Length: 334
Image (cartoon, rainbow, N blue to C red; front, top):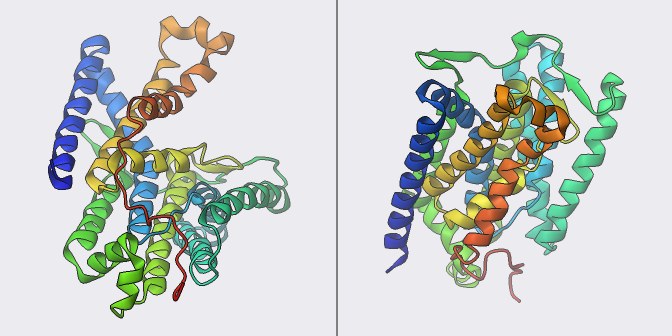
């Protein structure tokens, strides 16, 4: 079975899994509750899906940026800051995208032209982001650890559907994923980008600037991670905390492991993880779980999406099939 056949098979398997999840949930809790959980899952999917699509573009070029968790945190902070400063949610989202792209550009410059370790640089982004945002929250608003938007009008508007209110980001992430898939599979840029990830030596020798390609892909990935941070603070949560990402950047990286850099698969897997998060939130409000929640069970329920990642990694340890050159430092002439 070749790679394309394997991807088609895995897409069918994932579609069946999602249908099984929805069908089983509907049988257990009823269709109205399942609809509510599904809407929550779509909302929870957005930041994971955006970060995953961005990192797929980045990794297709050969770089691995584990610092997307930190990019999400910093971008979420600047989204709130800009939205309140300019009294505009659009300004906040623009700031989040710009900050994400800027941090990713710095990462790319260090790991391409500077020849630095991608793992160390990514860890540095995560650690610096946690410290910078924690300090900035205190300096800017005198609130340790969190900041809520002072006006709900600064949150991104909702779309009202027959099933309930839904963020327009839920549709935007699907459009972005489709555009990214087309970019990678049907454009000269996408072909060159994948070539630079598979074999940068041959690509460079053919006259294509590998460094520039990787830099541009990393910036695109950072911009999408920044948009994920802006969504979290201006839509999903309505504020920012020092740990606003809550591991979503790492869950996005887990999506790549299962999807093997296939964008439709990554979006589907992001929905599964979003469904796990939504299920954990929904269970906290079930009357029969009241005693369990009041005794600290809410923390266990919040662990469900992360437990899902651990279980999935244990069940599918060898699913990833990527080029051995991805993540390796490339320096021209060596």
